[in-house]
Each structure stands twice: as structure tokens, then as C-alpha cells.
Length: 134
Image 1 (cartoon, one colour):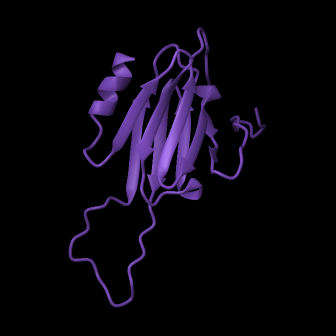
Image 2 (cartoon, rainbow, N blue to C red; image 1 turned 30 degrees about the horizontal axis):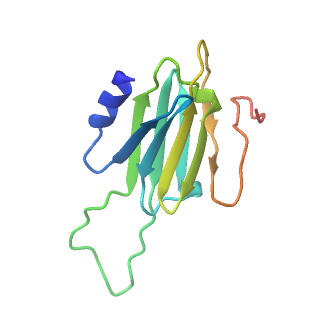
């Protein structure tokens, strides 16, 4: 857990992540304003959680940027605690807030896989490396 907390502290200042813990799971809440299910990707590989997302920016025809401070991309990777079961993670995105729930489970070995992102209208299974739903 300490390694995860340290990694979150080392993220760039533009990345805002809350870390919560219950008896059964960890929850990461990531602010990614402007991102949606289609523009975000979350995966777990080698006990590391990777989050990649991009925001869409619309610039009106009569305007141009003089200063552009909001990043277009959020891309980070953090280690998972030993008791975390990354392959059973559930991810959702709503109004630019990405929530990753990682259950706790002892003795879990995991392989790499992409975790589908749910929007507020439904759920999806976890994709395995061979394309089958878990």
C-alpha cells in the first residue's frame, strides 16, 4: 500500500487522484475532465495499473489559443498492493471522473489484460488477453 501511495504522490501536479480503501477493495478516483469511456483506457499488467485518457477540446472558429494550460492527455502507471486483485477490477467513468475499484484477494497471480470502462448506462465484462469475457 505504501508503494501505491508514494507513486500517487509522485504524479504530475495536473493529475488529481484520490485513494480510498475498504476491508474488501481499493478505489482510485481520477479527475479527467473532458474524458469519456471512448477516450480512456485502463489496464493491469505485472501488478501495475495503467491509466491513459485524453480529453476533447473544441475551439470555436473565431478563436485561437493564447495560453493552453489544460493537458490533453493523462497517462500514468502505479503499482498495485500485493493483496490487490487487478484482474477483477471494475472501472467506470461519469462526468469526467474515472473510478477504478480493485478488490483485495490473497495469492492472486495475474496476467496482462485491458479493463473495459463502464459508463453510467450499463456494465461490461473484463476482456481477457485472448478476447474472451471473464
